[in-house]
Every structure is written in C-alpha cells, then in structure tokens.
Image 1: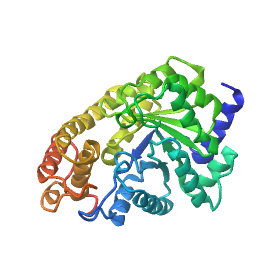
Image 2: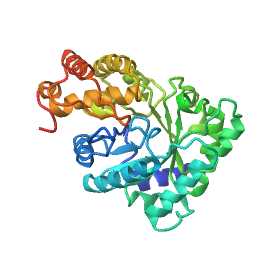
Image 3: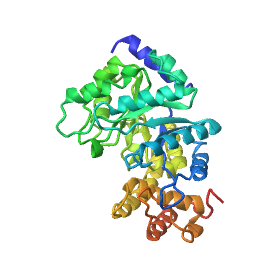
Amino acid sequence: MQPDIIEQRDEIVRAVFPQGIPELWCPLLTHYRDEQATLDDERIRAHLRRLSPVVKTFLAPGSTGDGWEMSESTQRRLVRKLLEIADELDLLIMIGVLRTERGAAREAILETASELLDGPPPRDPVACARALADRRVSGFTVTPPRGAGLTEQTIQDELASVPELGVPVAFYQLPQITENEISHRSLAALAAEYPNFYLFKDTSGHDRVARAAQDGKQEYENLFLVRGAELGYAGWHRGAGGPYHGFLLSTANCFASAFTEMLAALEAGDAPKAKTLSDRVSAVAQELFDAAGELPYGNPFSNANRAIDHVFAHGAERAGAIPPPCTISGNRLPSELIAQAAESLQRNGFPVEHGYLS
C-alpha cells in the first residue's frame, strides 16, 4: 500500500474522529408508536440518550433498525430525525444505504450527500469527511450488490463506484442478504486505492477478511475492522488475540455498558473479567435470539433486542404490564418474549428493577 494512501486515510479518520475510531458501534433499533409503524421520535431520543454516554457512533438504518423493510421515505425521515438528535447529544451517524441493485447505492449516496451539503460532495476526501462530520455524519455503509453468481471483479467494481464519490465509506459483509461475500483480495485492492474507505463490518460469521488481515498482510494497514456477528465477543477482539479492532453489534442497543466494561478489561489485560462479561451477555443473547427466531415476522436480532430493551426501558415488573413494543410488520412482540427477556436478564445478573424511562 502506498504511504500517501495510509497517511490520507489517517487524516480522514482524524477529521471524523479526533479522539480515534470508537471500538463499540451500535446499529440502532427503530422504535414505533403504533401498528402502522409510525416512528416514535421521543422513544428514539430516549434510547439514544441512554446509550450516548458510552456509544458515540450509530449505524442507521441497519438490519437491526429494519432498514431492509423500511420504505425510502421513512428511511429519509428517520435519518433526518437522528441527525437532529445526534447534534443535541454530540453523536455521529453512519448512514446505512441498503441498496443491492447495481448502481443504486452510489445514486442514493450522491443524492443524500448533496442534500446534506447543499450541493455535490467535495471530491477531495478529507474535505468531504470534514463537511459531513460537521453535519453529524461519519460516512455511508454499503453492501455488495445481490447475487450468488456475481464474479469477484463485478463485486469489486460495484463497491469501487462508491468511494469514487469522495465520501467516507464503510463496506458491510452481509451474505445473509447479498448471497455473496467480498473477498479479502478485493478488500485489499479497494483499501489500497481509496483512503476514504476506512471501516469494514463483517456479519458473515466466517471472518475470512479479518483473519487475512491478522496474518499480517500490509494491504489492510490502518483499515478498521469491526465484527457484527454475535456471541463469544471478548475472544474476537485484538486485545484477546482476535482479529478485530472493535464491534458493531445489535446487542449494543441493550448491553452497551457491559461491552464498554469488557473493552476496558481487555485494554487493562484482565482477560478473565472480559470473558465473564462477554459470557453473561452471550447467555441472554443466545436465549433471546433462539426464542425470537420462532416468530413468523421480522428480523430475529431486531425482535430479540427490542424485547430486551423494552425490559431495560420499563423495568421487569412494568414491562410485563404494558403493551409490548410494535414491530415494523405491524405486529407487537408476544408478551411471552418480554417475560423471557426479563427472566433471562435477572438470571444472568443484569439489574432490571427500574427502567431508564422512569
């Protein structure tokens, strides 16, 4: 990799994150007021206020926030509201551009960036990063185009069309939706050419790119890798010998404080404490993911976190006495899932006597 690319990527990252890239990111849940999936602005604000002391950058709308099921008009309204709240709470939003048709992500990003900046984004990537950060945007996340039969070169060319715009970019490995994976060779080529590509999220569970980077390949120098796959968290971090710099987790909606403690323990060299915290979160997450996976509607990760967050928001006793939260499908979560979340949290030592909304 050319030294000027490395230096420019560092400059772009400093423009967005003067204190360094956070190790914990959250793909934010979207909250709804009713069965018509009307956005609940105040509930969204309260959730962000609860997380803001420990999480500073959010992906929205991501898979956990129903981005794949949300209309484009609702996505735009949600992003506008989140940027308004981010300005109040000193946060950053990574805008998820969940478009899998060829050329669709580039077109959507150009339109959004032009609206945010009152004109086309600067082609200079450092200037573009500064301008977007001033508007509380840390970049745009895109996936490969959809298609199991796409060639490696086709995927690479499609992804390259986005950083060509000059905007800060994160690529998102999500074969559950795209039916393919970005190869470590393609990621290395993109990182070597585009300094504004600074973050890679992998939710595949295969971790091929991160393992290639861990092998010491210079092509990945100063590219920040975050894991999106759940469970067994502590062991995946570089502080424990794993291949990732950080995490972008659906469960950060509920366990941000526990993850922050876990990361602090890893930094301090206290692997046993980090593993204990990781195991407690994993126990609740596994149980609720399994239960939510039986529902005939919605994303199991979104439904599970929505149930857990409902208990944290209202407290265990009140959470079971009020209507369960709505999902984007128009269905409310079953009361049995709420009760299971409350019981699992208590059994695993998470305090839920009082809710953060009270």
